[in-house]
Length: 398
Image (cartoon, rainbow, N blue to C red; front, side, top):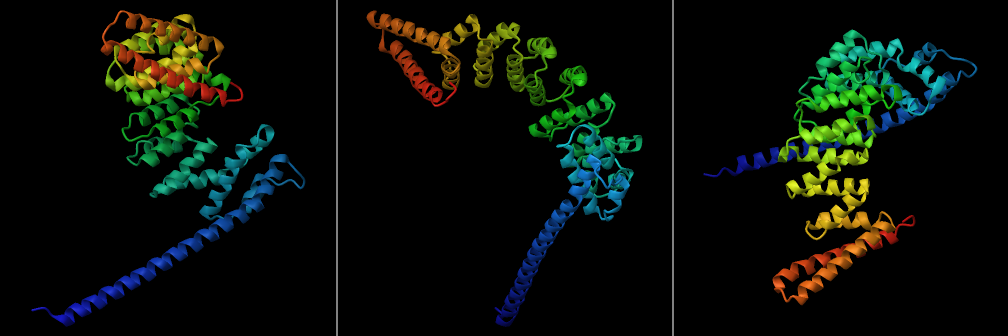
């Protein structure tokens, strides 16, 4: 039999519990917000105070302060060290010359090296990540730190492994840096953005390192890693104009197995060869076009063959204008309508010749079934030209 008193007591107990839980969450939210406001305000005051001191130090203004004098003014709280290093890193992106060299003396100061070395060996994941960020920016890595970073870069924690791999890019030994990239690229849980960021960090951008970077990237392409990652590598090589690697990329395109798993890599190679203006690859690219009706590969081919811009490749694109799927047809029209008057004349001539052939079909009284598809394609081309022309006219520099 239903006991009304027990049910009422349970309801009251549940109500009290929910009320207490609500008050707790409300209090916790209020406390968290106040805490965040406090630290935001504290950091701003901290930055205002040390910003001028650091600039005076880098500019050697009077009265001169040594690196030790400035660091002694920082409390030994972790947050203060974190705020200070963050400020130094921001200034490191702005300053250059002797001022940047003096700033490096602060970043690599033994106080911070010792502090973040301890953080690197702590159990906390956050502490290790903070330490990795410091060593990435300071480059002050001894053998003990190096060994620990290598170990962390193998972590199952993706965020932690990524931070350690970035830190290892500050090592002086190129083989260590390349091995760190390869180790990370072999993972199955990484994102394209991570790959791109690591390549950007690995590439110093210095002329004296150019050959070393190019050889390392070629070596990575020969390793057993996911084709989607290789796609990003070759795209990076094209975008950053590694002209010394163009022949290698061309031979690589010729060797890669034509299969669905490699489609993204093939597309990347075609795009990169276009950006490197390696015209010898044109015939191979046209062959890939014919192999399979793969829209992404064809779109990359349109762009690259258009960059080459010789008569043979432009004629090839026009010949396929009536046969290809709509996205590719649209891309071809765009390349002809927005890249100069000569191309517009070629497209106009092609349309006139097509119209002439359609009239001949009509005069021979061939079936409507043969005529209709061609008429539909002509209408598509006409619509595409109108869109591309409007786009061109709307650009003041066109």
